[in-house]
Amino acid sequence: MQKTPVWKQLALSAALIAAGVAAWQYRAEITALWQPAESAERERGGDGTGVPVLVADVAMAEDSISFSAVGTALAQRSVTLRAPAGGEITDLNIAPGRSFSEGDILMRLDDEDQRLALSLAEARQERALSEQQRYTGLRDTGVTTAARFEDAMTAYRIAEIELEQARADLADRVMRAPFDGIAGLSEVEVGDRIEPNEPVASYDDRSTILVEFDLPEALLPRAELGMEVRATSPSLDTGEMIGALTAIDSRVTATTRTARLRAAFDNPHDAVRPGASFTVTLDLPGARYPILPELALQFSGGALQVWRVDAEGLAQPIEVRLIRRRAGSVLVDGPLEEGDEIVVEGLQRMRPGRAVNVLNAGGTGAT
Image (cartoon, rainbow, N blue to C red; front, side, top):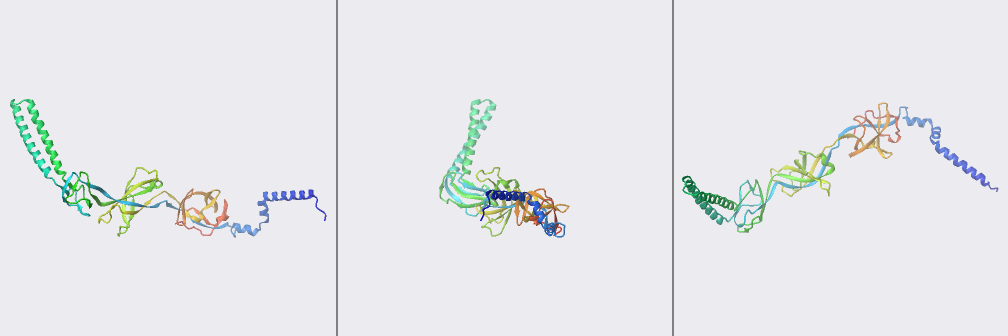
């Protein structure tokens, strides 16, 4: 068999390559020449009115967030009762769960020495007062000197101070309720000797329960004092408690990027104790955004877009930014208005300015 010359093979290869390049450059024109007429008709919609699509109406919705966190209950006021002085306990009224009013006596210490000291101070004060009155009368007659009068006045002032000190020492032998509240377990008993400032028992005002929890800094601008807060706890058998946001910390914790919030809840039946765990829920409002079905989103050219049908029945791409997904719908930020028709079915055949045939006139709104 006679072989084909090499130069013919090279020429044939060059021709095939040139034909392939030309076909690639003019592929659109070639496709149009070979496309059947009925295929073009189907692209317009079958009846010449446009590509058949389903649309949905754009609605507006608030970007509200329901935030939940775990918090710890605190009493409205909570203190540790401490001995005002040292000595032997002679009377103890503290019992777990017992309620007291402000000023009620909680504990007494042995006060015999203090009562004797008070009697002595009263006697000295009476004598100093008598001397002060006597020298005041003599000064008016010129019998006594100014120095003696000043000594008598000084002795009287010292006696007055000693009397006040004795009264204070006697008062310190009694521990009283600092406010209306409920006592906890006592750490001492009658007959114990305690030192000044030694812990005696916990004491709480539980008429209002405070729950503290952390809120991420990204949500902090949405929080406002007075917002309703819902709370549940394993220690509650009465269901959900409703309270209000009463305090927002002035700082964000650098390590957690959160801020501490505090909510207050009425506790009229004393059902909640300090230290209990709570799950709190706070509804945080946000800005209003267009909401539409998630099916309407299309990713193209590195960005999200939707196809809006204009007044002339033509589809136009609108670039949007995703804000939040919500049960099959999406909140987006973009140049959309309430009532705009957005394509949700038929996206694959969309081109800028392409005529569409809306099969569900009026659309359906997103929820």
